[in-house]
Image (cartoon, rainbow, N blue to C red; front, side, top):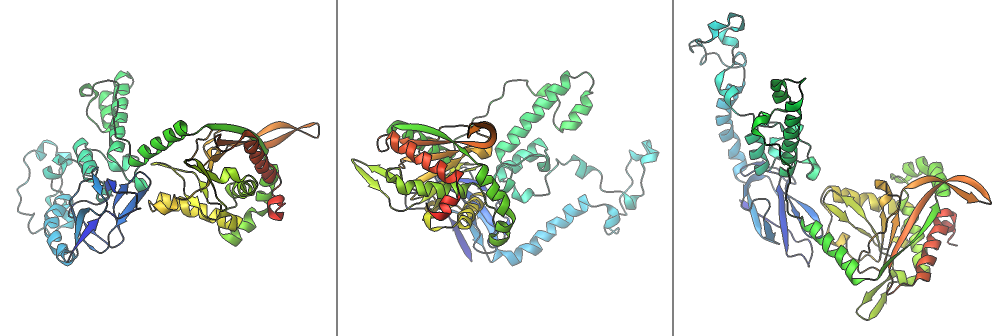
Length: 455
């Protein structure tokens, strides 16, 4: 039976997707639930798996934009039992070319006449029974064997053409797979190493060539290299939305700083017991989500949208948490976050990160947010002005915790401090409301027991 492989629907508003990468090659045998390819839309990246065991036939190459529901390949489920004996036959000849003769049946190899050139080096002579087939293997280009089935066809061709070892190339694709861009960058590094070795008087040219595993530097021009590649659909969507936020809102940012001493002491005190009981770590984000909800309840304008000439206030709290990934920034939404405990909030974040890493994030995970929190502190940011996640009217920016001297009760003391920033749409939120909102967050985080006591 032949099963059609179609591009799945990822949301009503999405009509096409980019077939970013095939994980298998045309003619490969695949197993049920094994990843076949990955698609990218302007919102999500999704891996598509095999429905059944079968032999894969690719109809649409990677890099093509395809419509939702389009057939990009087929799986022949009936070809699986017959593929094994037919594949074993040609492998025997190749295996004999790559296997020492001592491990093979000597009956067909004994009659071969001894090579004529070997007497020139008596010390290198070997008995015929222990001599591997000499010429065919050494003249063949080196082909990647370990993990070769994970390479896309275009990547495999480039690797074989340049005689590269895939194990030496860092992969940036899904699950660490090697992309064509990774190979190009690796080749650029080889060219740079070759040029540097040519100028170094202490290194012999032969040693440079063998160390980098490439052609001599003489055939590689020493030029300023550039690489042009198209923006991914997600990156294009990010660019459009950021420009919309800058052009269509009256965005303004206010700042404050928070003493994180109480929160850090609380986390340290209950870190182990919290992890044992709930199976997740007690992070900073859950404290800020709880504090933001308390502030949103007081300043409802920040939990509102502008729709034409109307203001739509929401009396529910769907909190978006910005998560950075290799393919771009995404903002999954924790729905009804006010109903969740600290442990449930932390678990929700862990689940979203896992789905993002496994390319399983759905459109529904990104829709419906009313307020967003972005933590640039995980990357070392000390201060920033976050851009609105339209149509939302505000976004909270967290930053790195840094010990600084502060004045408390007329005494200069060292405290772990964090700058926080609130960017807001001045069309709907006044400065008084924005400053009050941020001060409320500061009060809740500096005194976390207030959130527990709801005061």
